[in-house]
Length: 162
Image (cartoon, rainbow, N blue to C red; front, side, top):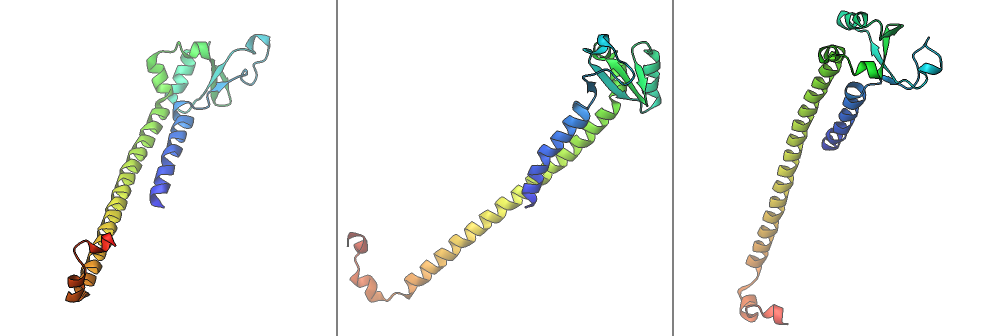
């Protein structure tokens, strides 16, 4: 049961990593609250939560591109991809940390899965060898219990030729 639990948790961790840190819910198909009009209808916006001072500084530095609404900033996708790599890494710092944590948990689960599978194989091999040993002992004891006349009456391989 533990092996099954660990094996089922690996795809779930992958789902969490993708949904929360690789492709978080940042893209909107409509304009942010407070921005209406036909010109904004077909523009994709990225939603960024202002979680710390560094992100707030980036939003303030590009105040012409960002629209602030309730602790979140919205930027058109075309402007978002034009931000510098340094700015994007600051915005995604929490995502990088979350991916690191999930990767660590993932590796620990893979190692734990390896240990459980190794233990299962060793137990199965041991049980198989014990069964073969028991069969050999029973066969040996049975042959030893037969009388000498049995071996004198039956020719070698005689029971095979009927």
